[in-house]
Image 1 (spheres, one colour):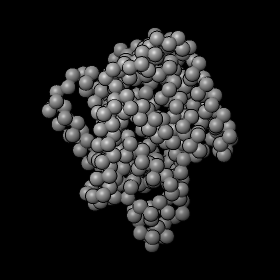
Image 2 (tube, helix red, strand yellow):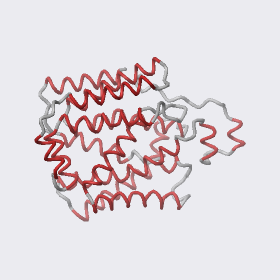
Image 3 (cartoon, rainbow, N blue to C red):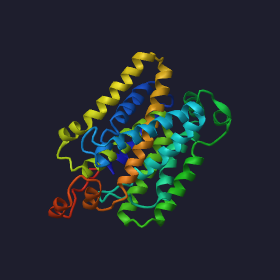
Length: 318
C-alpha cells in the first residue's frame, strides 16, 4: 500500500510542480539502465546452472536469442521497437503478479492488460514525447510517430479504457478479495504514474521501484538467498561481465549522447527476451521443491528432507 500511495503522490506532485518535460530525465534513465544491467544477472542460477560455464547450451541459447533480437533491430528498427513493447508488456504484467509459490496469479489476459497500461498509456498521454522516443529507437519518426505527435488524443481517455479493461479482468480472476483490492490500487497508482509523468521518467520509476524490486524478491526466494551480501555475490559476476561489455563497446564506438541512449535501450531490450523466457520457464513449477528438483538446485533426497514450506517473499509494501 505504501508503494502505491508514494507512486500516486509522485505523479500528482509532477503535475502540480509542472514536471512535464524530460529535463534531467537522463538521471532517471541512467538509474533504470543501471538496474536493468543486473536485472538478469542470476538468470543462469534460476535456470538451474549453479556456476558460470557449467552448461554451454544454456549460454549459447541465451546469447543466441540476444543476437536474434539485435538482428531484428538492425533489419527493421520499427519492428524491433514494437517487439520490445510487446515483450515488455507481457513480462511486466506477469512479473507484477508473481507469488512466493512460483506461479503468477491470474491469467495471461490479466498480465497483458496490466502490461499494456504500462506501455500504451504513456505513448498516448504524451504523444509528442512518444514520437521523439519512437524516433530515437526506430531512427525515423515514421507514420505512427507522426500520428502520435499530431493526433488530438485526450490525455486520460486511452489510459482510463486500459485501466477499466484491466480491472474487469481482475474482477473475473480467481484471486481472494484482499489481493484483488491491492492489485486494483496498484493498477490505479501505476495508471496515474504513466499518464501524469513524462514517459522516460514514469518508466524509470516503475522499472526500479516496482518491477526490479519484485523481481529481486522473487529471485531471492527461489534461490533461498540468506541476505543482501549473498545476493550481491551471486549477481556480481554477470553484472560485471555486462558492465565490462558495455564499457568496451562505448570505448570502441564512442557514441554521442543520443546514440548511447538508443543503443543502451536496444541492448536492454535484446537482453529482455531471453530473460523473459527464463522467468516464464521457471514459473511453470508452482511448488518450490519440485522446481528445485526439476532444475537441479537440490537432489531429490535433499529436497525430501527439507521443509515443505518455502520462505515467503517479504511483503513489497511493508
